View 1 (tube, one colour):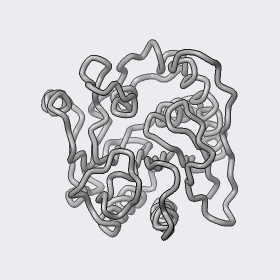
View 2 (cartoon, helix red, strand yellow):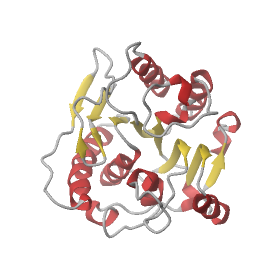
View 3 (cartoon, rainbow, N blue to C red):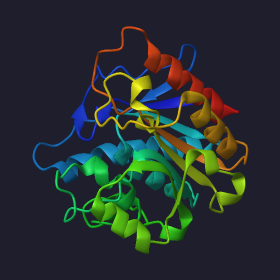
View 4 (cartoon, rainbow, N blue to C red):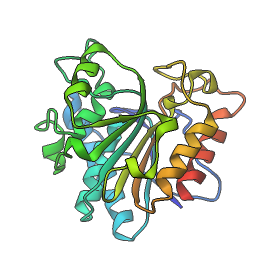
Length: 254
């Protein structure tokens, strides 16, 4: 397995984020000189670098595996697959919906819109500059999403995007075609991971999450993975993050 390391949270470079990279694994680190000013051109520059790294791995026939600091990186991952001629569907593991818009989000946090960006929201700012073709809603599955705001509940009730619980996931539930898997580590119960940015109680344990990841990997259709390590830097003296990331990567690798 070769990994693409993206030590950023949105457009903030965090070399001390502490994304655990397993020993003995080839690493392609994406670090980019970002322009000053507004966030959108900065994200486009960063995710263009991600897209090129993903496209290179996809063209070689490898599963592009990204370790990053947030879920919005998936825009670059999807763009990279498309540049390599791969038309992905999406399996999105997250404690949150990530389907807010600029109008519905009370916080304005862009990470809470990450899945919606893939579906075409605010495409002029992110998708179009990346050359990313938005994904149809019916080709996306949202897994877990136990912590939703009212606007997200309303959108999902009217959307063709499907929601599933971890325990309910089966191969038959997955969309057709190559799969982009976005896995936010906050899908796990917040008691299991220290220092999460947006902890959500009541989530699955590690065994349940790994079984679900193995179900997806067993299809043989995983084209790319973004493993979003959505925690604050520091604060893991017992090394739980590294153990969990290694376990997830092993499940993806089959």
